Length: 298
Length: 287
Image 1 (tube, rainbow over the protein chains, first blue to last red):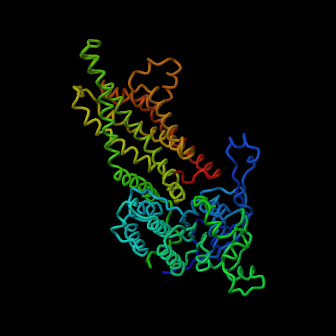
Image 2: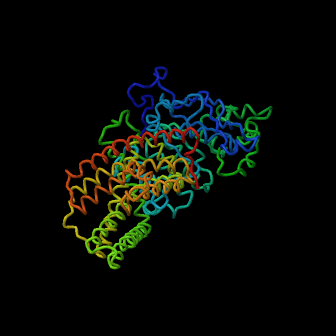
Image 3: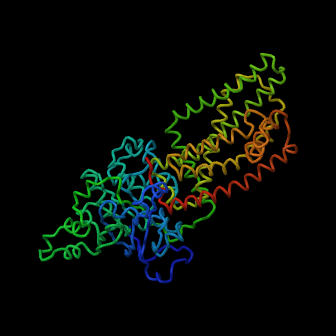
């Protein structure tokens, strides 16, 4: 069922007054994150003594129910940004609010509203999908019975039958594990879903299953989604707006059509595809980016 | 499409029964994990039994070679038996905390666990509760397998006092367990070895296999700062000498103070370490 997202969860009236009607799902303002090099490198290498700025003054807004894409080359700061939004990383400067809650000052409140799927599905793999999901369901306040029932329903939707769901996850392919990761994220009923390259490395059928699921949950449940991807077709298919990130900065933002118009440079907009947009704004070819270290998802 | 609905505006957090349910999530997860690793559990059980027998037979050897009298042999047997069992219990509690955090780092689940909306105290107490239950079960099995090898006199034992000492002493072990869990969270490669070093120090100074008064003076000072010293003293006093609650009052009081100080202190230390890890980006998957 679709629930109006205009009414945000009440958490004791702590939301900022500026978000009285209705708050943005995500409000990112001037976020900066730097990583200092290890002490040993600072002492021994002149060239690597300075901090590396992974996210540099990033600002954007995502209204409730939208799918917002963040696209950038490997190492551009996408995953660092997602970790900040996930409350797993503290920004050095700036402010992030999720439905009016500050990720630094109200992390527990924010965690109730979000979940995340990363490119690398992380589970206790000797355990079954149901056992893994049972833990996360309970950790988000669901009962055991509720979690089992909903887990099996979600996995079924994603193409995993009950027999598969009760086997150790070690026996699953990466694509199947990623589907369990998607189920885990949605099981906890997030208002904001952070999808960090959720289809990277999946076979075409698994990729299509995940993309369809993402479109469904937005359409039927009004979940707000922040998606990072290397797949330009996927970005154009799913996202209402897209921001391009290069060296930690947002270098362009708009609807897919607006972005194509920006780089058309005299050509017909239909002749410009999102790969052209990617190359223009990131300064890299798509295949060059895909050849990068798969673990370095920025 | 699923019929799952979005969360209601206010789900009543954080009511107490809900916190218990949240803590139970960790007990249940660890139980499911250990069931999948039952082979390792058998190995650790076997190791525990062999370790107990190998150390406790020292008392029989001392008796048979005439170094000590028969009465002394029986007393020494119980002394060593209690030492090995308490050590097995303590190690299991501490290992459970550090191993699970190391596994979480290894599998990458630590990010998902730490971003779940569970108060950190509930998370850690839940993990500790599993550690205590698991350690109790394993130690009981080691005891059951080892006891038939020895003629020990348990007729004088005051089991109520022993149980209370274990219960109160376990609070401080929870605190130590949470503290050792910090190490693998911050240092995935070296953290486990560092937690073994902490255990080794506790083993040295706490009088596991000998009375602490044989230690050099400076180490006896460290012995006084180890809760395991009082845990062992209390259990031996109750089981070997049959001392009741009255005679154990001071030991129980010291253990209670350790628990009251160590548990909150360890929670504060873990939260500070987590904040530092979030600041420096150390919560990523390793492995």
